[in-house]
Structure formats: structure tokens, C-alpha cells
Length: 453
Image (cartoon, helix red, strand yellow):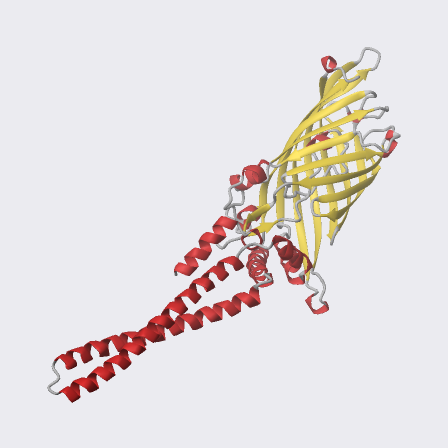
């Protein structure tokens, strides 16, 4: 019991991340609501995602005439900065479906963003030589999993936890020391019993010697006493050695629980079983609903005194996801998680439209966006196509559509390459061709310990 307590205390002190934490690798840098409200995002309709702690997006529109990105967005998730050390993976994933709507989950998935773009050319939606800035937020309202999906996620978390323990490079040595510890404890028990028996026999002999009636009997009993004293001395010596050895074993056990992040991380990245568990843990909920809001201003000629309201919007995004998990264990290959998502969006927008170029007169008008997107993901690649209809409340002449094909490739954990091509909103200069890269930074580890620890 003391040994177990010592080890647990040592675990707490060292924060053995590889066994007790789960490091999310599938956290994407979401499309900034600021870019989305300006119609500059690669995807206007985005499947709800788990946000990373901090993200930066650099986008380069092909008709800017330069390779330097003039569109930049930053996004951060307060949860990853202020989360407690004991936040469970199950809680973040809402794998228990504790509530169809869970306010705590909404707070965990909240992300805040800031976006900026400078327009050098005449486009339908953006005015020449104008800097646009936007702020926004996004969060998850609903994440619902089917019963089979819940069970698969829980089973994968348990399997991941167990597999990481098995991957530790000192597992064989730890088993050897554990066996030796058991043997030492067994010997300690045996020698203690032998010593206690000898002490009891010695006490009886002392009494007999004191009451011996003849010298011959006394001499014989004294010889027996010397033999028993020798046994007691030998037992004491053996017990001392065993106690010292047990202390060394305890120290070795504690040392073995020190983290070996580089070696263990390499083993985890190469392990097929770990990757299979990751695919199951990070599978998508069956139903997701996100809410987002963004507000933007326009600053002509970079003169802040001339800044004006540009556009604001609030929207809801709903996704129905289907996960197909293909286990290639027999082929000794990583498992593949195929994902198919049908996503719909409804967006209410307050727009500030230029009515008279001579007097620079703007008028506010309300409009609504309706649309859908079909997305398919396989391994590191994601393909999609989206269609969006924009209808103005009192000015049907401004109505337009957006149809864009999208491609996203995961270069590494937290780094995504994005590209899109198609027709943007508006009636002139509406060719939309964009290339960009999203970076995700920061801590993405959650507690993996079982509930009873």
C-alpha cells in the first residue's frame, strides 16, 4: 500500500503526460468568422470543429497580383488556456451525451477571432484601397452521439490508456522488478516467521535452563540455546539485507515511472494500435450545431477617421456526420476513418452597401444566406463542395449565389493546407480562387486518467 501511494504521488508530481493525458492531434484551425463575414474564407459553410488553443490563417487570393498574403486571421480558444488540469477527455468530447445542450460544452468549444484584409482591386463586395477588419466568435451548441458511437469512443479511450502503458520502454524491466519485489516480500515473510519461532523457542529454553536439575541437562540446553541464537542472528542479518534490497526495488520502481517523452512519443506515432484508437476517439458526433457571430468595419485608405460599419452577421451551422472506421489490423496498416458530412447553414446579415460612388453614399440592408455543403474526409485529405444563396430583404437585384469546390490537406498536426475554386457572391469579378495555410498552436492535452483516480 505504501509503495502504491508513493508511486501515485510521484505520478502527480511529474505529470506523466503520455499515460495520463490525451494530446489531440485532430484539432483544426477553423475558418475565421471574420473571413467568413467578408466572403474571403475558403469555406463559408464549415463543419463544426474542435478549436485549437491558438490559430493563425494566411490566405492569398490569386487575383491580388502578389504572392504575399494580405489576408490574415488569428483565432484563440480560451478553454485551452484556462482549463483545469483534471478536465477529462470524455467531458470535452461529450461522449456520454449528458445533456443534448450542455452549457459547459459550449464554453469549452468557444473561440474568438480577429481578421484583417486589405483590398487593392475593385471587387463586387470589397471596395478598392480599403482595409477591412472583423471580430467574431464561434461555439458549439449541440454535440450528439449515437449509443454505438459513445461505446466505441469509451472503448478506444480505455484501449489507448492501456496501450500507452504497454509501450513504455521499461515494461519488461518493470515486470522483472515487480517479480523480484514479490519474491523479496515472500522471503521476508518466511524469515520473519522463522525468527519469531526461534525467539519463542529461545524463551522456552531460558526457562528450562533456569530450572535444570543437573549440570549435564543444563549444558545440553545451553548448547541448544547457542544454536538458536545463531539462527536468530542469521535471520536478523538476512532480514536486514532483504529490507535494503526492498528499498532499492522501491527506488527503481519510482525511477521507472519517470516520463520518457521523446522515446514514448516516437513509439506512439509508429504504433498501429495507437493510431487506430486515435481514429475512434476523434470520430465525429452524429449531430453537431454551431453558432457564430462576426462584426466588420471598413477603413478607406488606411485612415481610421473614415472608418465605417461594413457588415455583421449571426449564423447557425448544423452537420450530420457519418463515420466509417476501417480497421486494417490484418494488413498491419493504420486504421482509416472515413467521414462523410452533410452541413447546412442559415445566416442573418446586416450589410452596408455602396449606393452612390460619386458621393460615397452607403445604405444598410438586411439579407439572409441559405446553403449546404457536402464534405468527405479520408486520411489527411478532405474534399467538399458548397452552395450558398444570398437573398436581400428589400432589394432582389443584389441577390447572388456562391458555388465553390474545396480541398484541405493536413500537412502535420495543427497545420492545414487549404484551397478553393469557384464562383463567389456578386455579379462581376466573382471568380473565387484561393490558397491558404492554417496554423494551430498551443497545448491540446486533456486528462486521460479513469474517473476513480
